[in-house]
Image (cartoon, rainbow, N blue to C red; front, side, top):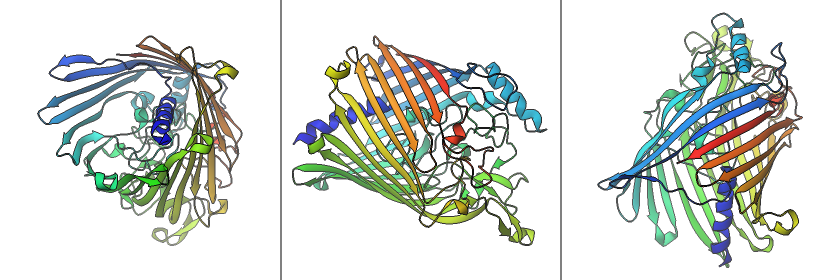
Length: 515
């Protein structure tokens, strides 16, 4: 059937697009002997401001905002029936003059000074696990790893197991595996060929560091803090802040076990195949993985009632994907439902511990949905624009849906980008165009907030020089959207996803050497 030849082609192109690479020959790994292999990369990032920000007195336009170096190693090899994988990353930043000015501003509040190097630098065992093929049906992967559910880019519906480290680049890293936070997991897959499917069971025993749970948000005053809050240490994993993290809160204790399963398979309807999956997960990432702010006087963290927590949630979901011959495209559908999701409200509510005094940022529970529709297709426009191969067009529509809610409920959205409405819809378009025998790839990304307005335009150009060198330039240009003036989007009628990126336009240069 045509799907068997068409779908892998589109999926391969989609993966290439998402990680920002044009089609290229595979790079041979370094042989270490006895079946062990080493590969990796060294990378330099430079980014420059394209706008002046309001928080500093100096003119920050065109100033260097990031000078980051990363070294990554991927080592694999066998010991008896086990095959081991170790992935290690070392990252260092030279704090730029611009960031130094922001860091100095965090000391305006005594005892609240942030150290940006502690936020950006890392020596990390990213992943360390072994694979064991127990039988022809049962495979185990045990150790620190990443388990990705779903098929979407940028935003996720059923990808609820892991959080992301957004402190140094927010959500603008196309390689999701570079910012996803791996966890120590017991991951087993049982193949059921009779039903054309497999059952995956995932258990997180709770052995991780507490900061590995949920998203790490850039609310410590650095270059990706929200508009008008740069230079203000609202909350930091490393130094605390005006608020603090509470990883042991009764609504979400990171020492508790997480667990879930996913069944995936192939169904044949007529002459077409449909890939389907359904899943359940109990963890701390349902609906969104950013921490939830709360003012809790009964469970303070180091005496501080203003805290960020990661509520435990139960999420059920599913996905469908298949080929549409009439338009030569692949569709993707995802849905995830998280009932009784604890959320914070900016509305004043009585607090029993304070004799009924009215306070903001109290927790309320809401039933929530994540909905995703996507479409991928090849555009054969070589004769029109001179590409060397078919272009890939990828369209997505994401909706964070909360029935019966509007902005007057004051439900705090994400890390301070305003408040949730009933529907919170973002559309994305990705167009990838290969040139010069696929060595040069020009990609255009559009994001649009269909609820609050605003969006982003992200053009990028990558050139592959030989087997080792990759050069990439990118512009990150936000536009429109309601502005937010402090991290938590208060009062409730202010703020939006892209309004929080006001004055954050950036130009990025990235050079990678692969080995």
